[in-house]
Amino acid sequence: MRLLAGLAAGVLVLSACGSAAVAPTASPTVAATPTPTPAPTPQLKFVFTADLKPSNEVPPITTPEASCSGKGTFTLTTTKDASGTITAANALFETDITGCPTSTAINIGHIHKGAAGVNGNVVVNSGLAAGELTLTAGAGKINKTQPVVDPALATDIIANPANYYMNWHSTLAPGGVIRGQLVKM
Image (cartoon, rainbow, N blue to C red; front, side):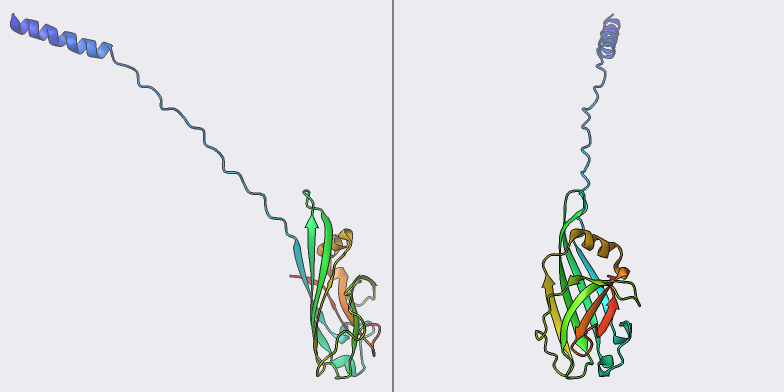
C-alpha cells in the first residue's frame, strides 16, 4: 500500500507541475532608432584653370609678346542659403606668367564672357592696376582678390565655365596679351 500511496503522490505532484505551467512571456521589444543621415556639406568653393596663350587672343598676338604664356587659376568662394542658392561670392585670381620679353608690363586682367575665338565683355575685374605688377626676367605672379561677384554671375560661371575666359592685358597689347577659357577642376 505504501507503494501505491507513493505512486499516487508522485502522480499528483507531476500533474500539479503540468497544470501549473506558466506560459512563457515575450521579451520586451525595443524599437530600433534609425541613424539620421547627415545632410551633405554644400560645395562652396569652385576652382577653374585657364591655359593662357597669346595665340588664344582675337586676333592672335604676333608681336614679341607672342612668347608670353601663363597658367591661371580662378576660384569662386560662395555663400549659399538653405535651398543651395548662391547668395554671395568672391573671386581669387592666381596666375603665373612666363616667357615674356623683359619690357612687358601686365596692366590689367579680367574674366570675360565669350566662347573661344570670340571677344566678350568683362564680367569680373581682377583689380590689378597698371604698374602694380613688375615682371622679372619676363615672368611674374598675380594674386588678386575681388571681394564682390554678382551671385547670378557666379552661378552661371560655375554652370558654364567654357563660356568664360581669363584675359591679361599688357601695354603693348591693350586688348589682351594672354587668354584662356575657364575649365572646372
